Structure formats: C-alpha cells, structure tokens
Image (cartoon, rainbow over all chains, first blue to last red; front, side):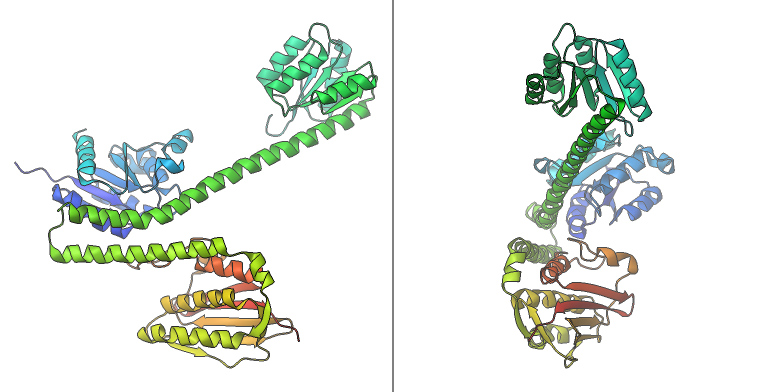
Length: 135
Length: 366
C-alpha cells in the first residue's frame, strides 16, 4: 500500500541542515518544501499548506522561531493553517539554559507540538512526525 | 511599588500622627498605608510590599525594634525609618544596627519629614535601578552564551547530520555523498576560523596594545598585506593597488594588531568584490591623524546595515545562495583594535558600486 504523500515544510536558515535532513524525509516518502527564513516561511505555509512544519528556533534573532510558531497558531492571517503540527528543531540544548520553550510560555506565547534536538536521528525524527501526523 | 508612585507604610499607634504624616506625604504625591499596631504593620508590609516604612519605636504589643526586624526579614531592601519620642543616642544606634536607614526624633516638622523621606526614597530608587540593571545584564549574558553556543554548535550539527544520513545508508548515490562530505568540510573550516577569531578576541588585551605603541610606516605594513593578498585577489580577477602615501605615513601603533585590522578589511574587500573589480589602498597624513582607506568596487552595503556592521556576529543578510563563510567577528575585532589605538573606523558605501573603510590612526610624533 502506497503511503499517501504528506508534505513537510522545513524552515531553517542553515542550508546544510536542509540538505542533510531532506533525504531522511524523502526516504519516508514525504514531500519536502523548504524556506530559509521566517518571511519566506510564512509565505510557504500559506501557499503550500504543509501537513507538518519543522521549524528551527534560532534563526536571525534569538526568538524568530518562537514568534513564527506563535503567529501561525494564533494570528488571523494563518487561520486556515493554524492546526498544522509544528516541531521545533534546534542546536541549542537545555544545558545552556536556553530551551526557549519555557521563557516563551512565560510570555504567553504559543509553543510547538514537539521539540527535537539537532543533529536528529533519522528514526527519532520520523517516528515523531508519524505520531503527529496521525493526529 | 507601583510604577510611578512609591508606597509608604506608616506604623504608629497615634491616630493624629498617622493622619498628619499621610497628609504631608500625600501632598508629595506619595501613596500611603497606615497601621496602628506592630502585628498589623508587619502583615501590611507582607501584603503590600511598601518601598519605605515609618516605624514608631514605642507602639503597644510588639516593640518597634521587633517590627523593624520582621519587616527587614520580609524584604531587607525596604527602607525603614524609625520615629522615636525618646531621642536617645542608644535607641538611634540600636535602630541603625538593626538595619534602619535613619531615625527621626519627635517632634518633627513637616519639612523634616519630607527631607528624610526623600532621602530614603532616593536610596530605594537607586537600589531598584541597580537590581534591574543586574537582571538585564544577566539576561544579556545568558543570551550571549546562547549566541556563542549556537555559533559553535551550528557547524557541528550540520556536519553530524551529514554523517547521519551517509553512515545510516539513507543516501546511496556516490555523487550526493561526495557533495555532502565536501559541504561538511566547508563547515569544518568555518568552525576553525570562528574559534581562531574568538581566541583573538579573548587574547586581545587593550593594555597590551597600548604598551606596544611604536612609530612605524603604515606603507610598509600595507605593502606586506598587498604581497600576501595579491595571489588570492588575482585568482578572482581583482586588481589590488597601493597608492604612494599622501603626506606623512608614520603612525604610532602596534603593528601586529594593525596587521590584523587591514588583513580583515582587505580580505573582505576581496570576498565581496566583483570579478574584474579593484581594491585601492591609500593613506593620507593629516595634522594628528593618518587616514588609511581600503576602497573596493564590490557589491556595497545597504545603508540600513551600516550602524550594525561592527557588531559581533553581525552579517549582512544577502541571497540565500551565498555561502556563509567567515565568523562574523572580523570587523568587531578590527574595531576593538583601532579603538585601543584611540583611533576610529568609518565606513561609507554605495550598493552596487563599492565600499570604503577609513581607519584613522594617531600620527607618530617626531
């Protein structure tokens, strides 16, 4: 049975990460679309209506990933896509005291549906995605 | 404390005292609360977090000193002023020993009350300001650590991610694998550059530079730079020229660190230049300065980026296709070095045409 092709949008400012992670997603028969910054990310979300978004936290400024996540989940502009599951990916680990998830929620911001640390293990990433897509 | 109005708690069993103090302070646009006994005073302090407390030493029930102790226990930074009808030296000393900011002997005039309250609130304001600065600094430090951590981690996670897909057999095509390894190699080089730049910043000691200031000819330094960079410039079809000096070319500086400054400016001029373009090095001796300029015919820098150009890690965001080489620290290091020389750097640029970096260094005397 052919898996129905879900579409995944990867928003990350590191082109190498995108190049490395796309084969993982494609190996699981997902369609991959990408955006290198928040502005393009917003456009692609509305244009492509992906089934899931992989969003890097530390983009241009320290909070870009979080603001974008919050916007997609709460802004009127993104009403049509607000239920798209979002997975935060980041190279910054808890150890440095900067898992922004906590500070973000403190400021009343909407958090993502899951978090994953870079570098991602293929099996781990794919199982999390599967779980979120199942609903 | 409310944003604008300091809050004062008056603990005194005499109604007339409470009323008159409240009135005087209300005229000073201060918010007041009152309590007629020690226990109530302590509870009120706990709930309302006043900025300043006026405590009558002779209140029934708990002694004034005990109230002072308890309020200090709630928040050691509440300003406490004790009012005493027994203006003996001992009670004043005891009060101060227990953390009172000051004491006010009865009877006192409205003016005396105003003066002491004002002083106390000023002290409180300074404390709160220092606290908020401390918090801001901590936040900035945490962010700084996060920023550095991110800068160091990013290349490594990208490399590790490539390994993950190659070693995991997810990518099978040999060409794709070779491409990925080559990209990983670029990230390794970038990371090494970053670490070197970080070490430069860490090692750079303004004091060392100041100790090493000597007169020398900037032309000879620029000539060495020219010799070093001409091969890589020619590879890109860029023409690198050094003008003969205009006027004096003797600067008072530390040649080793200045080499770093011009090396950074010239390599940027090459990096951001167009094929067939040119770079011109020029020096001009003025009365107390030597002005050294590095001009290029490159892509230029949009005006909105100019104020931030010398910030650590600042990179002008261009097209996504451009490979991010370099640490983003070069210019901030250059600025630090030039400032240690008591000089300055200025940049002017026209997008599409080119940029000119001007370094002003102190002229050597004699």
